[in-house]
Image (cartoon, rainbow, N blue to C red):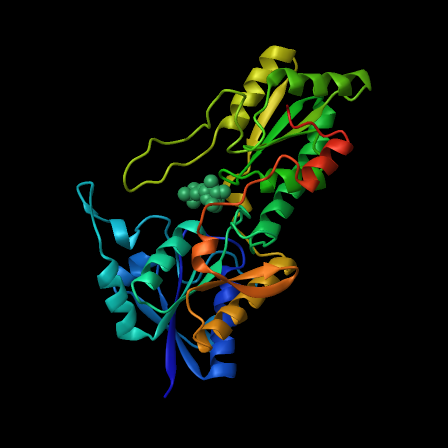
Amino acid sequence: MTKRVAVLTGGGDAPGLNAVIRAIVRSAEREYNYEVIGFKDGFKGVIEDKVVFLSENDVSGILPKGGTILGTTNRDNPFDFPVGNGRTEDKSQECIDTIRKYADSLIVIGGDGTLSIGNKLYKMGLPVVGCPKTIDNDLRIKNSTTFGFDTAYAYATEALDRLHSTAESHHRIVCLEVMGRNAGWIALHAGIAGGADVILIPEIPFNYEKIIEKINERLSRNKKFSLIVVAEGAVPEGGNMIYQNQHSDDVPLRLGGIGNVIAQNLEKMTEREARAIVLGHLQRGGSPTAHDRILATRYGTAAMNLTAQEKYGNVVSLDNGMVVPVPLSEATNGIKTVEKNNELVKTARSIGISFGD
Ligand code: F6P
């Protein structure tokens, strides 16, 4: 009998999501004679019973497309589902019943939040396989990486290249604020690839005097401009992260604004012109790089393999370049941040990049 697997994408989008969906559908049909259905807009679509059938023709042409053809949301947790007037209800069993109505199992594609929901549903008895995605690269699993990250930091690197020439022409300090939430991976990678002078990340609190030391060192070599990459979660020593909104039950906190604060403070303290640029969702939109298309395709087929082999309760992950299953509980146990003695941090320091510490 033909089996059927359901797929959904949850959390913030990441370049490569469509490549995963395509790989799942194609390998399901070609290797396993499985049917695939998709729920629209993550778990919200499960609660609202919004289903689409996905055949090979439906996923034709989506490999290079950013976003997700299924839609997504980073709200609407079925265990804490908003039902209006600030109230929430546990809709997890309803969610399982709806998935079971259409399919034998679920492949959940998402970051730590969505995979945690997948893990809880798995523990309640739903056959679940996870596929990790995040541009932040903060998947807990050691040495692993997620699709979307390469595209995000390649874009941030290109932005730095562009800012380089204008900063140099105007003799300015330019702060580029990049995403990453509580992890500094995008800033660290883009900063090295884009030749930044200072990289500020949440894991290494910064001190304005140290940043100015770097700017002055450059001035002493007649370099009248400086490029600073700031992770949105960067914090001054003894300070706090900056958010764009207030916390409420159904709206997650959004980081952002630190780049501007740093530029304004540096302008005052150095009496040199400074500008801030926030890269924001440009890092998430658009076509995935070739690297991310390949990784997403590998993850998609591996997730389908685990499903067909009934190896539920796992996420697909990378270990030494090989795709391997890792228990969902391991992948959802916190995030992976940049360690202070990370090899890339040491490399950056060796070539004179300051971390403002
Ligand atoms: O986790 C991915 C991410 O892009 C973070 O880097 C960023 O802080 C957050 O999502 C932004 O979320 P939203 O889509 O709600 O603006």
